[in-house]
Image (cartoon, rainbow, N blue to C red):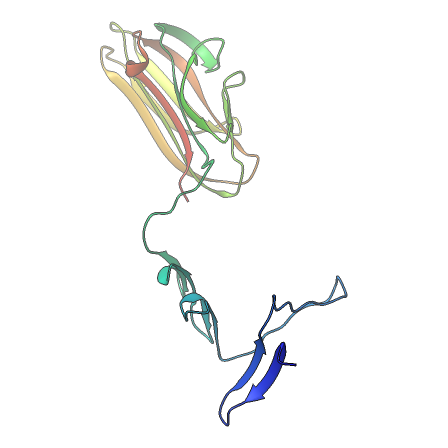
Length: 212
């Protein structure tokens, strides 16, 4: 019958299934499937591109026949918006007035308000943001000081200071920021030698995030 045909028209060869699904399978679970061609095109029956792969060139992904992602010699290129769920980022704060000396910030002395903790990589109890993957991370701190008390804030990676901010005059906003490379399971935290800050979460901001 004509349920499955193998044909050649003088220039091109065709494998055509005229009923049901066409399934190519390997009965050995450890076997591989190799498709070798100069350029590879996977298309819909209406000839719309799904995936293309070019020899010594790009691999391209399409949505409704519109290219959305392609590999390049320098990485990849995305057309449109890229949405990633559970992207590692935490934005936390304190609503209370703060008067601290020589402590790591935790929920027992600072953190009582969470704006976002996507992926749950920040643990307020320890004050640590644990890096889930190798990458480049940003850590940021800002607080509005109360009266003329000086401030000293340290941003730390695995317990070691990577950036430090001082303000000796008081009645200002003390802030510190660092961008640092981390390995999976490294942790980031904030330690203060001295900090006296006004109440309200709008006056205090801490951010940990993966940026690359």
